[in-house]
Image (cartoon, rainbow, N blue to C red; front, side, top):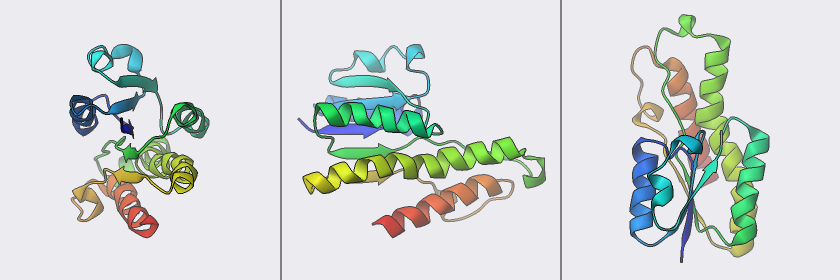
Length: 159
């Protein structure tokens, strides 16, 4: 049975990925900030819910180590992220740091924990949801674009 580790599974694409991979018979490690509020995903076959805030480096190390100790993970799907819109000068430093930490550093840190595992196995796939916002810009989304352009460039550089 193949295993996928997915970040950001409480809504949207992450949630849909959990449902898809579960239906295909995969073992799914679905991470989100508040798994205690989730009921439906945890009932799907092969799905394990884990609490993970990708802005917490210590939590990343701890949460990634658990499934890797149990059995191999075949695919990492970096999906956690969110938008931040508004005039740049209106964004607080805390908002800027939080967005970049979630959308860029979180991706990098989670991936960093998986690379030794994939190298040792000589196998593994890393998928990262970026955004069209990592390729083109729109007004009032400068912080988001900065993080997503960074994720795009980093992903291409890593490949």
